[in-house]
Length: 385
Ligand code: NAD
Image (cartoon, rainbow, N blue to C red; front, side, top):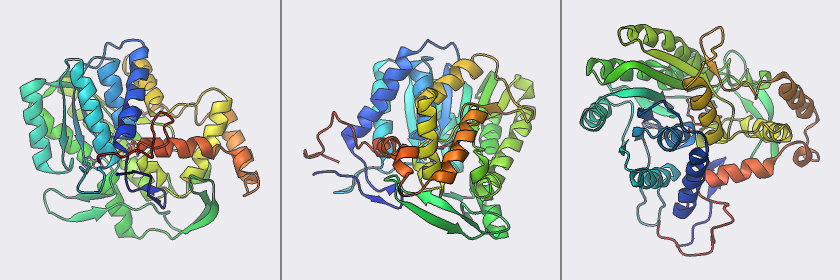
C-alpha cells in the first residue's frame, strides 16, 4: 500500500517502515563517527524507542559498545494500519545492534507495570548480570497505578489562571491558543504520571534484585525552557511533575549510597519529538529556536544532544547546577540565544513567520521521526506496513 503521512493536531497517526529504518540509520552513522566512549557498558533504557531514549540507546550501543535492554510501549502493524514509528525504529535498532554482536533486547510493555519490572530483572540477570546505567526517558499520557489499578491522565495546563499565547502547527500556520487552568486533581494526576515515583520504583526494585552494579548511574530527563513558556510548562502541571522528578534524584542517590551510585536529572534542550509536538506554543518556539541555533552553529537534534551528554557529562565532569542537575539546555538558554528568541517572538506574524522561524526544518524533523520526508525514499511506491 502507499503510505503518506496522516497528521491531525500535530500528531502523526501513521509511519513509514523504510523511512523509520533510515531515521535510525542516520543516528547510528552519527554515533559511530564520534569518539569511542568508555562508559557505559550495560544499560537499561526506559522509553527506548523514540526521541531522547532512542538516541541514548544508539549512543550507548554505537559509541560506547554497550549491551542494552530497552522498555517501550509501541504498536505493531495490523491489517492496513501501519505500526507506530517507535515500533519500526525499535526493530531497525535491534537489527543493527545485533549485527555488532552486542546484546540488545526490547520489552514492549507498560513500564509502569510490576510485571514489566519483573521481565526486565529476568533479562538483566540472564544476559547482562547487572547494569551500570539506567536511563529514564518516558513521555506518557497515562499511567495505571500497579497497586491500585487506578488510571491517571497527565494534562498540559497552566496553574492558577488561564494561558493565552500565539502557537503554530508545523506548516507555520499561526493561531492563538487559550488553555484553561488545571484543577487540583489534574495537577496531582500529572505528577503521578510524569513525576519521579515510577523512576524510584524501578530503582528500588532493581536494587532489591541486586542487578545494579557498584557505581551505578541513573539519569532522568527534564525540561525548563524559556520564560515565555513558563506559565504553561515550567509553572504548569508538567512543571510540577518535573519538580517531583528532580526532587527524586536526591532520594535515589541516597538509596544508592551503599553502591556508591548516583542519580541525576539532565535538563535537555527543546527538540521536535512526538511528545513535544503536542505541547501548545512549543512548535512555534521550536521553529524560532531552530533558526537561531542554526545561525549560531549550535543546533543539535536528539543524537547530538545525547552524544554530548554521554561524552562530556557521563564520561567527564557532570558540571551540575546548584540544584544538582546536568544542564544540556546550556546552549538553548544562552543569553544571546534567548534575547534573539524574545526579539523575534514580538515580531512574529503570518507575514514574518517564515523569515523569523525555520518551519521547513521543524516540519521535516517531525515528518522524519515518522519515516517521511526523506529524499532517498520514493513515497509513491507500494510498502508492506
Ligand atoms: P518521545 O515521545 O519521543 O518518547 C517517549 C518514549 O516513552 C517512547 O519510547 C515510548 O514508547 C515510551 N513510552 C511511553 N509510555 C510508555 C509506557 N507506559 N511504558 C513504556 N514505554 C513508554 O519523548 P521524548 O520527547 O524523547 O521525551 C522523553 C523525556 O525527555 C521526557 O521525560 C521529556 O519530558 C524529556 N524532555 C523532552 C524534551 C523535548 O523537547 N522533546 C526536552 C527536554 C526533556
